[in-house]
Length: 518
Image (tube, rainbow, N blue to C red):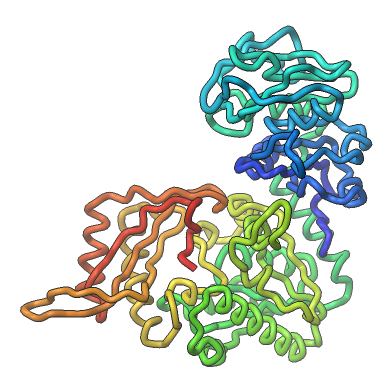
């Protein structure tokens, strides 16, 4: 299952990414309209794009000007597919320029809210009246339309805020329909999907059916070893694989010594109930901690953990019938963040189940949720009948507490973090906020600070609390937790956790920060 079996099983819209901060939002908006959508780099090879058999293509925005030397361009093979195309912002300008129009810097740039007046009738704006509120973000504009194109809308500063060559089903929007600041943006995207002739057959049920069929086809009579962590991603994967191939699956829970308080015991009980004889437990904590001894670089930590995971799985595969496949809970944001540095994406960090895997790996990968966002995986989990407390559990990183202990990972530092983290989780759950906050945890910093406890001076650890709100982890904002809750967590931590005398709260959004500190 190295290729995308999901795309092959459904009608697909492809988003070509030209560097916009909103590219992932376009993908989500299309999926919300029950049409499968995938984002590809703007310079995707012709055979790869054609192999997706897209019903339509959306060109994202981007930070460049079409007339800049070396700017991303619209390749000939995109239009050669002769499917409907929608260009957004930079994508519209690329389309206009490619068709023979003229793009230039605008004397009056548009950033923020604007009102678009709709010119005449078009299926793209069906049902939207004569004017709409939109979100603009551009410094260039189209000065002259290409032959065969007509204006669909304008603003005071943009004579061509939307355009179309309707004979060839080519459309452009100068504004961003994918953002919430364009209130009717979803209707515009929906209208484009109608132009593409999409059936709207992308659903949780259809995904489950397609995944089970694809797993059966990929595995045949082979055996699969699946790493389960206790989180929703890997548990959904294990459940899908078990439904597809039954006893050919061995689900392995590896205790890497980097788990939260009481987590190993809770996971063992849960997996024995969910997976029965397909489940096995491996305690490799000492091995992980030995290899992490003295390591402080976060990327090196992740790669070490990824390597050891695979080595353990290899050993388990040999024990259980010489398995040929490794199933993982890789998600779409993991794939994007772990992308190699190149024209379209910079590597933010290595995920142990993506970029952290060794190049020479004997096992073939099975990654059925690789093209889903977290909320989509949760819907699949509910449809599979998994317990709600598991499905809605806050995300936990693959490398575990190793990336929440900043600096060297030692048993002593892990013990401090476990106790503090348990308090954070207990208090947020007690406040009834565990469903509202996307992720919440403690971070043990490498800092020490002076404090006073009783009548004595202390010099102890500084501990940070991180809590964020998000929909899919691509972007996140710091959670505005009640002051009283923050005070209770801080008071309990400094009184109940030996070695901590100061608690701080992280109020940084993503971007510029990531959710995890490492």
